[in-house]
Image: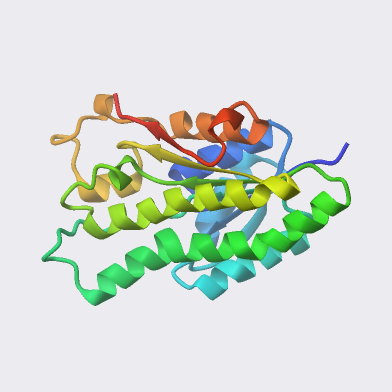
Length: 237
């Protein structure tokens, strides 16, 4: 039986790390991508032997395409692509300058779009050879349909990510590729705490990274196939 392989961006902490851990526990060989080698090394040691680490700054879409190439070279194939890496400042409409908008869209929308396109030929080859179908899961945000004022550009970028799932499902049907967007509310991560403190948003009103990772794993396993092409919303408690 072919061991399934997965590439998880933003895999050194938070949601991405929990996704990588769950995929590895489910029998996948995993590659994780992040900006800092020490963070990746620590994450890999907690995921398990054979974890591939890929250093890249995904603000650069060319770097994102290169990560797909490097993952394919290291893993030999690519069955699962999880576009999890994301970032946002706290910025309302009047606080959003050209540089901020460009950075937010680059990381949250442009690079995932490019990485899917780069992985597509591998999905096609694997389908042609009789291998298992591919899966793309994009981590979105409930802000994509409820754009909080401080997440003006981020919310719009994540709305684009939701649309990617529709395209992946539609164009992937012929080659066995499924696509999902998973859109949680507030998740207890370092990024969240750069935006809002615990006094304003207590931890008992946030999701755990494991809550999101469990839904991603269900998508990968085929347990959420009725929602192929859709955005799965996970409201905060």
